[in-house]
Length: 168
Length: 231
Image 1 (cartoon, rainbow over the protein chains, first blue to last red):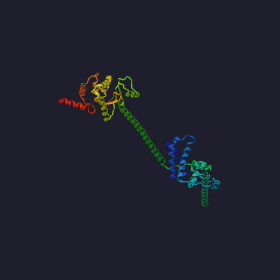
Image 2: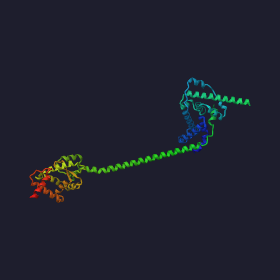
Image 3: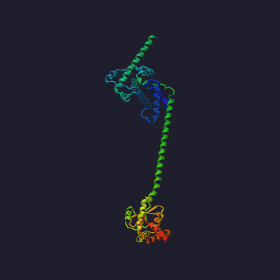
Image 4: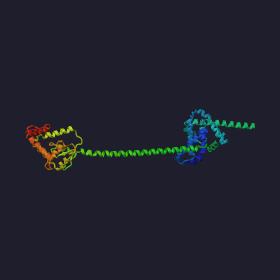
């Protein structure tokens, strides 16, 4: 049964681990640790939400735990966050998953964690601030900066592609 | 942004090979450890159970072997008294001039103390020459029925026994003395050896002018015998 569960959910959960860790070695360790936690706590699943949601939450928590051991985010002032928060951004919508994943890997750990939690997992800034032990403002600013970096990456990529096309 | 979310939320990547094997091996190790802990717990439980049984057995043996000793230390009252003497009555019995004979069998007695008591008894027997007090004393014992004398005889094993004296005071005497008293009682079958000795001593003391004391009683008898032999 455990092996069945592993084969059923490991591809999705491995991508979660990859998004948070940024490298395959750490992702592999997180995948292993997460599945051991799941098998040990299977009896605690009460059936309130979807089983996949419960598993994903365990993997996200495991990844964040791993992230917190490595990185300490510094809180930023309100004025800084206000400037960054105003920027709107949706440049990733047209990219393929694989490309988005590569770009996410290039983000710094702090940006990556907040971007993953807020944009992909759907955590609110309040939740993120509670989980990571930072201000809500810091969470917002980290997200805004992550978006800016990603936008720049997309623009650079597009420029490079267009240049390549012109050269051809 | 919703597009990005949906794309990345369901994105799948094939995990590297060998991850499941290492997970399975870790799970096996943890299960084995759990079993080991359970074994230790069960061992502890059996050890504690065995220890408590051993303690209970020890207590039972300890108290059961001690209890007869405690019974021995209790005073044995003469059966000539019909009613049981309670602790309060016991004190009364000790102080009264009642003619009951009380016998106790002490377990440990100091020799000095008993010797002293024997001396006291002998001192009381100083009037043996006159015969008056001696008669009273002998009568005290005679008044108790035959079960008393049997009790005396049955309690000869210990070195000393306690009897109630003329004034109601406890008097400790040796087992030999108890045999003497017992043999002077005419209601029980006579013990010729002691009767003969007592009669002999009585005669000696009657014909003697020296005042006997606990210290010189036997000396007087010995002296008289020597003088008779020389004659």
